[in-house]
Image 1 (cartoon, protein in one colour):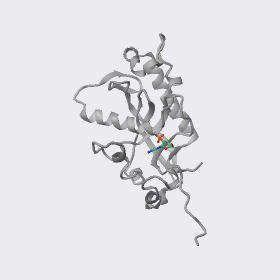
Image 2: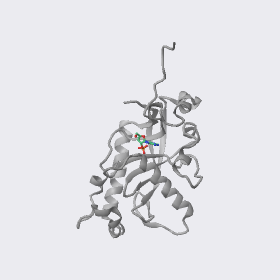
Image 3: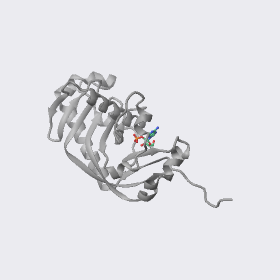
Image 4: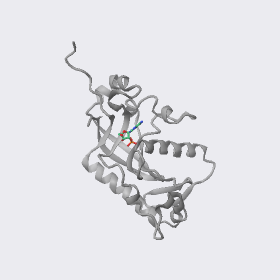
Length: 220
Ligand code: 2AM
């Protein structure tokens, strides 16, 4: 028989280095602070349900769910049980790039009543380890460009699972595509802030943030 059996991780992704994690958390925190003080945001507190008191919402407390190392998931393989997990592990690019360093570009930050996340713009090389069906799996109705779902979860509201962050991002992208309206609310020192309704806020960073990562698997 075989001496070795394949061991599949819970998920594959790009894991941020210690330094890049602090920097990304800082950038996210700054957005929450900006939003917290913005009159336009205050007008839409209701989007966040009962979380708003007279003084407002403490967004940092609101999104304190699901800590852990910051990362951009490529494939959720569920220890080999997820659809396509074995095929993914066999991809040449996955084997070749495993344990390699990558620079990821963060192009925006967003919050919804469910999640807070960073939008990631993948390079062609990075797309080689992006599963072909990632967007299709998530959005039944529409074809979105590969890599649209790429993100880093920064926080989740109570009782929300992190898988929601990528679904929220796809909803933003659908609305952007359909957008015949100008959603821009404000130019901040970080970039253009847009409100899409239903508690959905997106900051388009005027300068993309580059983060250092290692591509690999998460096994615990
Ligand atoms: P995330 O990538 O949005 O943070 C472990 O649960 C990790 O795998 C989390 O980072 C989570 O979301 C991601 N994840 C969980 N279930 C998933 C799924 N069905 N599809 C894609 N990613 C998933």
